[in-house]
Image (cartoon, rainbow, N blue to C red; front, top):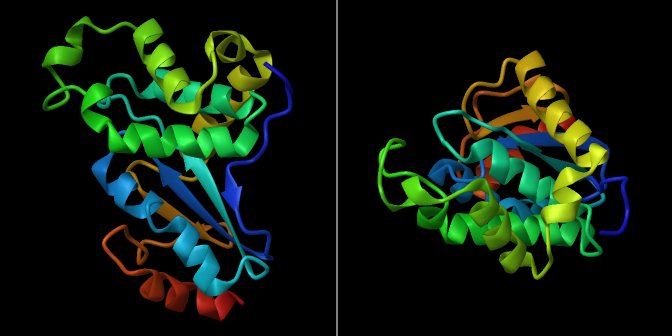
Length: 185
């Protein structure tokens, strides 16, 4: 456990803000997440900032614990890189964190502690203490409230310049995303 101020989960540092609301076990969010760095590189990290917002969804039954564990990872010495590594690892091992048809399967016997321990193993850090931090709790609550305030119901959902843009989806190429962002540059 290191810093109680959490680094933003973002790529790039440009003036155009693209926000991506992702659920960490959603296969469509996984597809979008896998393209983020290439998208930022294509548009230019000095032109765009891609902010990842964690969108906890109750039908993904461990979603709240997983989102909070990702934020806990960002509170470790690894910071933003640890959080992004946690997300990549969760997406790669989705079956270890999700229920079959959102209702049954081998994960029925897992506990929140098991989930936190497994995500900690992905990032190489003990997440139990950071998971308890007030800053992690505040960040998690903020993510939920921010998504609700903006009418976010599904993942992934994208905002460009503070407005939801339903034209942007995980099924598109990074070139298509770049075309949607181009008018804002």
